Image (cartoon, one colour):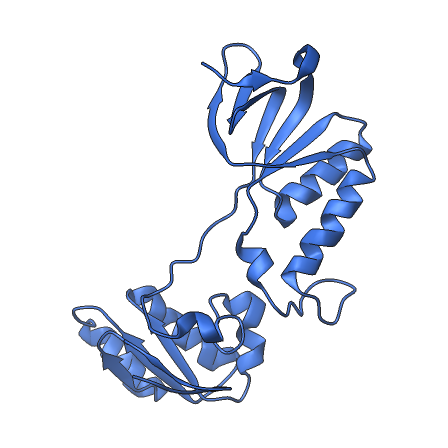
Length: 216
């Protein structure tokens, strides 16, 4: 199937696809079990974009990129190999064959820890404020909205439930923006009862220079 194998057909005990927190944590355990481990990572990922993580044990505030850096250093201390690359194919004629670029790697096991990607709406200036005043994870960043004016944006009824949850835990000053065809009457009644105003429409632009000021 092509691809240049490592010298002497080196066989790993486990190849981990992805060097996010999950993949790195798994590699540290396996390395401490004296297993031959290889991580293949293409870079990027959700954690690396996080600027301020406040729910990480022992750290009041730490960036996602710092977590990844420290995790890689710790993994390497247990003889875990880390290579940059994009895995495009995994086969199993006997051992697992993992293809990344021009290389083929052999392993007894493969752990896929490739993470997820953000499903962000096409709103102008969104990336300018991303992870500063625009957030996608209620568990990670909901606390930062405590007592503040908040706009909850989405395109499904899950967004309505998110608005209810945010009001229950963090702030009463919420406006819901839904770019969907309609809201069932039962949801409308509950939103009115909870005092959450809502707008049906697709946001197009975020206004602001140093700080987010308005949504258009």
